Image 1 (spheres, rainbow, N blue to C red):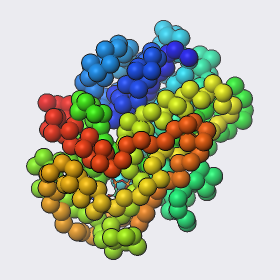
Image 2: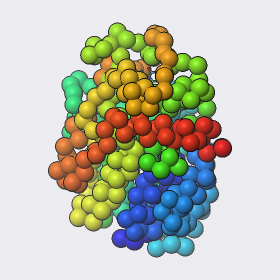
Image 3: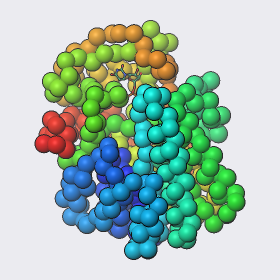
Image 4: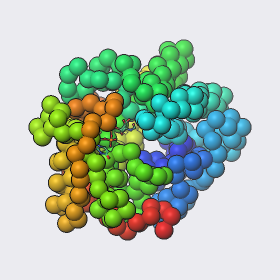
Length: 339
Ligand code: WQD
């Protein structure tokens, strides 16, 4: 395998994955519409690894753009990140979420089939599990009891990919269910750059630390967890990126559709993350306990053993690297890529 198309390759997880692909000697073509990403992230990826990236600016729904990419490049496999991912926003704009996340994947798979490309790594989410009846979450647990159009769109795509492969066994597909991606590449040159007020915990913490936000609001401290605040399985984005490379390489041997949890298997609470951030960076993170956020659950963490057994993949970076790398990116780039 030599050339990989990465849709959404300029995004937070996409850019970190593109870097791992390039550093492993693969050629990369990126399609991105820059709706929630920056061209600058790819320039910096090229700077870090001194490798060229072929870039197409366009939307995953543009079949003609996809056809042009497959006509102009001999693509061996596709890693599909392009999509909308804000849970709250998806409740307000379900059609846009289903159109982009589900419709975009249908458009991509049609273009791939026409071009004779049948290796696909799909960016899914642990939210397809819905409210867990027990923890840790395993890949064979029930899915589908999802609670937002975002999560349901990811669940629907997973179902489509299973049906597609049953209809046409030449498809080789890896579905990767992410837990909570955090952190940044150790260079401090690429990282998470939310468009406006961060929904997620870690970018909010780092924006409080740098003085961009006044204080962190902790959504509830009355959950049934060790300190009452929500527990999640935070995974370093570089570990996540390496997981994509391992899954991609496994596609050669892996018939059918295979699903992996990409998490550490360790649950940390909100206060654990705040305390680790302050201890590791020396920055203070003032916070206030407020009401629970609707839709949140107490605890969510993975059993990542299947990826270890089948891919030889395991998260290598712990909580201290997660917070230290987050801070280095934030401190070096107070305004993200718009410096
Ligand atoms: C983590 C914890 C909050 C912000 C979401 C999506 C999921 C995935 C990852 C795409 C929770 C608490 C947060 C804040 C807080 N994205 N929190 N104050 O909700 O676990 O998952 O992002 O796949 O689909 O649902 O992540 O970072 O929003 O919250 O107290 O300002 O931090 O209550 O306990 P979440 P999160």
